[in-house]
Each structure stands twice: as C-alpha cells, then as structure tokens.
Amino acid sequence: MANKYIIDSNVFIQGKNFHYHFSFCEGFWDWVHEGFDKGMVYSIGKVRAELLAGKKGDEARKWAEGMPDGFFLEDVGDAAVMKQYAHCMAWAAGDKHYQPAALTRFAEAKRADAFLLAYARAHGHIVVTQELSQPDKRKEVPIPDAALKIGNIKTMTIYELLQAHAQPTFVFKP
Image (cartoon, rainbow, N blue to C red):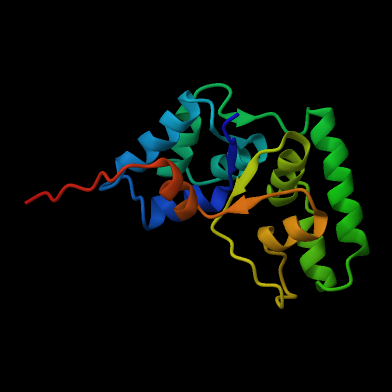
C-alpha cells in the first residue's frame, strides 16, 4: 500500500511566496493536484481554513478554493481524529520542555498543527511540513518534535516528498 501524505499550510504559503511561486512554478501546484488524483497527497480542513484566511486575491487562497472536494480531508468531524487530537492536547498539557506560551499556541483550535498530527496518528498519513526538528527549542513547538513526543507519527519535508515522488521539470526559458 502506498504512503499517503497530508501537507501543512506552511508548504503552500512558503511555496507561493518563494520556491513555487505561481508566476514561474505552476508545475509544483499541478504536481500536488496529480498526487491527489493518484490518491496519495492531501491536506486537512484546518489547513484549508488557514489558506482561506489569506487576503482576497492571494494566490494560495485562490488555489485552495479551486481544489476538488476530498483534497482537504475532514478533521474536526472525524471521530478518530478527534480522539487523537485529545491525545495531542493531553501531551501538550503535560509537557514540561516547552514554554507555556508555546504550548498554548500549539493547542489553539484555529491552528492546523495539532490537527495534522492527530489526523496522521489516526489514519497513518505522513505529515509534510517545512518545519525542521529543533529539540532544544522551547519558544515554539516544531511539528517534527511534537510528532516524536506524541508518538506513532511520521513527518518529512516537502523536499523529501518531491525526491520520492517527482520528476525533473525545469526547462530554461530564453
């Protein structure tokens, strides 16, 4: 069975602002869509909400609005996800490493991070994020470190996912 991936909003936001800007790298966005068509690449409702919170005219917002039904997987309405979300919140409430403000931010219901981890733990998907492990960090909770502490959750960067599932596509334009 092929792995399934759920993508964090920072991949889309940083992508449209920098590496995969719509003006020169539409191929990335097509690749995401193709990954969805192949039943491997998704995101979740909380990520969609974060993208839709962008300004009108924002390209990532327009892209999210145009994605087909099923790309943004149900999170809050999924009992298995909510059970794992409770597990994530219990971990956050008891963690002594991170500063209280970092854990409070992690636990905000409007933020996607804990829901991504809960979805991945409930359904076995791999979380794709731009965040890197920083075990000594205390002022914020990096997704890869939370995944390790919560347990039974794999994470990877978008670059690792592209290495595994993308072909070279850059062609020079004179």
